[in-house]
Length: 466
Image (cartoon, rainbow, N blue to C red; front, side, top):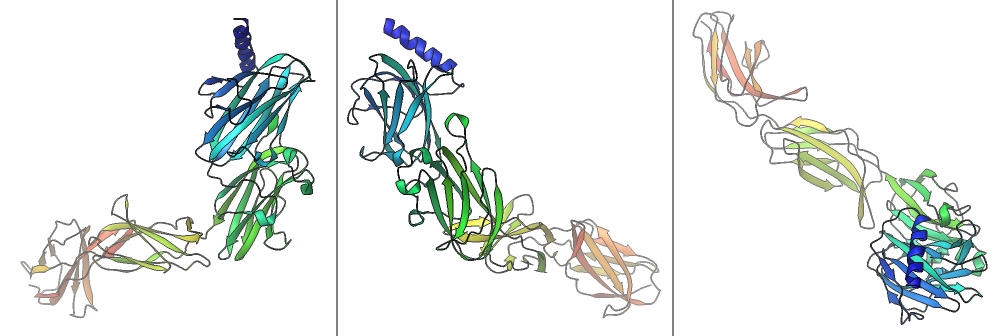
């Protein structure tokens, strides 16, 4: 009973000393778990409570199904600064320590117990966590291990301390990694941890690099963590030394490059390098040909891109047709005569099987050519009047235009009249010259976004005015 009360009190003290965190449940450590083979299994997100003493070692086993960042917060209710804890993480074979990440858990005079935080970027797999107590006392101390997991699409893990070990990544994506100089076990690096990444550029591109460093142990950041970009197989630096929050836009010629991230001196931080492409927006976007069922659009070519994506609306709010290719023209068919359509275009670049798009050019509003009109009859019912009747045009129609000419070539126009409404199919014009022969033609029109689009003229009809 006394042991149980001590455990409850320890847990209450532990939670009162930490920020409010959300965990699935608490799992009690069970002996014997002194070896990898006898490790207690647990699920990431479940906190662990247990007891540890001199010469005791506790192992815990967990499995990740996706890559991501695992954070462990260690607390051992020791008595003074003479007591230390050691925390280690091993990979699934149980033989190789994960990048030398064995860490000292020190006594905190202000808090009155041993505490430390460890962060690991891990790939999917099985891992073993080990907790060991370093003390001369014979006391049994309670402890807690809080843990959390944040998934990541990163596959950038150690070893990557040299150019020849650089991770290949595709420009346009985001790199996530960690610098851990405190546990760097490569004597050649003099307590520095290096991360290298290599990428290729297929053609001249402008790329923006944003370097962000996150907090590490107890909210502090590693000193002098920075990243820099070089040309591959040379020491030609093409960027500034980027520190936390720095970004730089760089125009890169086709070729191979590498990024170096370095942390110096001892310390830890996780970081991200966001890379984004500046893909130019096509200009000169216009319709160069239209008929009653199709429209052909064109734009100016963009240097260095792989191709273009062009879309045509359905006459409403949806983009019904999408086409891609490397030509700077595109024809959309299956349109309605006089239909009101919107078009848009953007450039894209293909890199290692991934397609990156630039911004859309300004949306183009255009109409398919309205349907042609058939005149049914033309007459002169009264003095100085000409009456015209025609068949209603198909498709989308805003109205009709009637043109009266004094000659058959329509080089001497007497009058023009626009009549609104698709269903209006008759009109009587007035004030014509008596005894004069006039030539009449009718065509449909559609208005859209301030523009008027005319269809083909009907067959010309001649009439002598009364």
